[in-house]
Image (cartoon, rainbow, N blue to C red; front, side, top):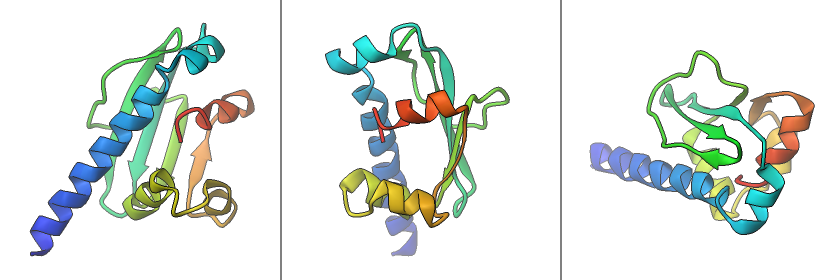
Length: 117
């Protein structure tokens, strides 16, 4: 049963990462992100899994299941925290200020995170 639960959680995580990535494609976000090129990486520390995607001129590329050497934005948290934030069950600012979410990024890029997370 634990294996099944882990697989379900991983599937949900991938779906939510995809949803976050696709959120960048909305018309409103495309206006704000024009000219923005960054590599965004998520590290789920409890399962030691990395996912990243590249945003090129505001358009996100595909999700890649590996650590990026050149990530501009590095987001680290447990998988359940990510799922809670995406479901609206965990306040992202409280998670950040309490240390449940750690972000390494240039200050100007941090505001862009709210577009998809």
